Image 1: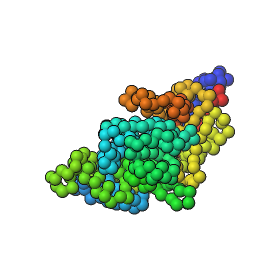
Image 2: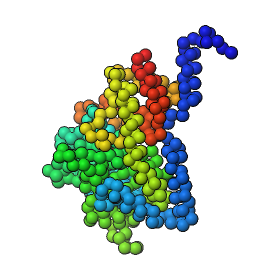
Image 3: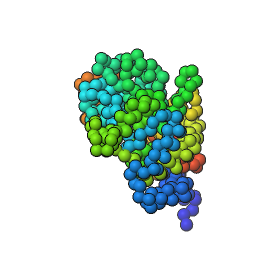
Image 4: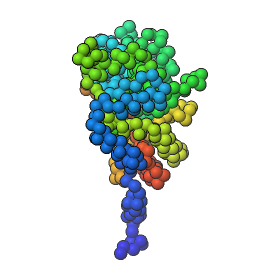
Length: 400
Ligand SMILES: Cc1ncc(COP(=O)(O)O)c(C=O)c1O
């Protein structure tokens, strides 16, 4: 056997890493299996029941989940659909936006948001974000408004609401619609300056969400939903999701086929009951990461607005300063720590969405963020040992 004295420092560290990573649960960006094990006893019979009753489409489970989500959010209407991208598209169709209408959204987000704007032949107007919470910059919105502007799409990025109070004020002043892209912040609570609270996705005229498996409320396939407090808009949207039908085989408007299936609704209904505790587990993990990094000058931990119920940490994203990010990613991967860069390219620089109208000077923050951000494993099953290991490895790399 190799004697300790013959191990170099390098060998010893490698050996230690091996022992730690061998005894520790495998670290994942999102641990869907671990979460499933915790709810298996409820999920399996619920799926089995649908297999037995064969109510795969538009079954009672979909309606039940819809009602439960309406109650949870405190919103009048939830209209389930096939995914979060459809939800955004259908929300815009429901509002009657027309080709050439300008829609303002954030440059720093997932492409789905701008994709549907372009797909509907609306004109996307990308604007910069805040350097602290990475959400759409209110002053940039104001600057981008023209007589053609019809809507603003704030994205509640990484789990924290955009500045909805200011956005709703701007919308009121300029007679614009607000469509909240709530794919990443379900369960987050926004606090207005007068202390009033509202769930993310219930403040604008309409909102969309995604139930993609890795989302805070994720199903076991694709799913999405639209939320609104407006009865007429809800009625319009219910027809649009169903081929534009309000009466069977009467197609009054051009619609789409976008449905949440019963198996997904059954899974979501079980997970909805646990959503607050899932979001709390994410917050606890975030607190532990924050604590570990609090003395590291080269790391900025996620900014959180006042109230602790505001952020649901869909992602835990650090901002790095004077750190070789590619080197850090490689080092973490070598140590079996997955990580992600959300998002590596600003939308205004993507081939599909480039436009001569854009001026680089208007995207100072996004252009910098894409170089500096790194997202760490964040999910409901992260344990202390994993968080300690991940943060120690990051600090080890940074301190050289
Ligand atoms: C901000 C944002 N909007 C929209 C979507 C689209 O959701 P889906 O993948 O369900 O179509 C996503 C999904 O990743 C998202 O993160």
